[in-house]
Length: 78
Image (cartoon, rainbow, N blue to C red):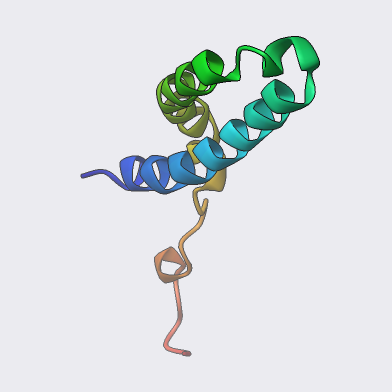
């Protein structure tokens, strides 16, 4: 697997938790949505599983180390 895929997988789990938490708070605090929470929460779970990898894929390249310390030239000094 490529490094960007690993980063995307790990970031996806964190993004999923944040997006799920934000949506759950919105569903449970708005009275009109709270009345339909038994239908909206399972739907929100499905939405977060679909949306979080997309958001993570956008964030993953920004989390990559641009210059790996081992890639620099050293002139015999370590």
